[in-house]
Amino acid sequence: MEEKKLAIIATKGSLDWAYPPFILASTASALGYNTQIFFTFYGLQLLKKKLALEVTPLGNPGMPMPMGMDKWFPVLGLTLPGMQGMMTSMMKSKMKSKGVASLEELRELCIEAEVKLIACQMTVDLFDMDQSDFIEGVEYAGAAAFFEFAGESDICLYI
Amino acid sequence: MADFDTELDASGLNCPLPILRAKKTLNSMDAGQVLHVIATDPGSIKDFDAFAKQTGNELMESKEEGGKYHFLIKKS
Image: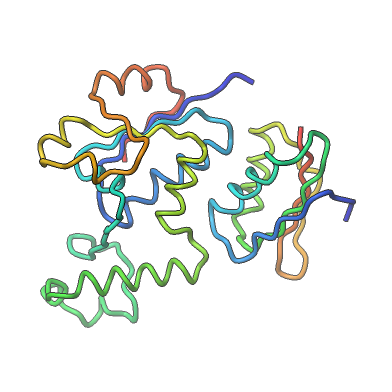
């Protein structure tokens, strides 16, 4: 069987959006895919040593709210200080109770499976980020390097 | 259920962990050996079928029993 390739661009830095790249990359590796994720803009948060990702219902009417909060809580109420932190911890405990892996665990599984993690050098410079904030093993490159791999890939996803 | 060499209890774990744990366990096994996976994730029925097809490992048995799913996978 010839080795297949999966190329992913991860652009989002919230807790919920961090899952698809790591779930798909780790699973693809288990299926024998050679996998690469290119992290750009807010997606770079997924490479930080200490993940501090949050989730917000703001601007996201599709997000199921606990205890029917969406029925009686006005949108403005969701902007109150502490609300985002509360939503995040509720989401995390929900995930834990349902046996959903933590992001740290999924990321570790990706690294174990030799998924190549590439940080967009331009975004690192743009946001004055420090390479020492990122986990070991990350490579730094640009759009041309992404296409070198993506151009040969069987599946290419923009998340 | 047929004989198996190694057992993996993935009960309570959700997608994609049962598959990832199974893959990891298979890596430590020899060709021809059989892995018995126990899972509670209903999505695992289709997932283990797809896993076997794509990795070339044989799914010898797939069944539900007492609210749990059982899979027998022979390493290729």
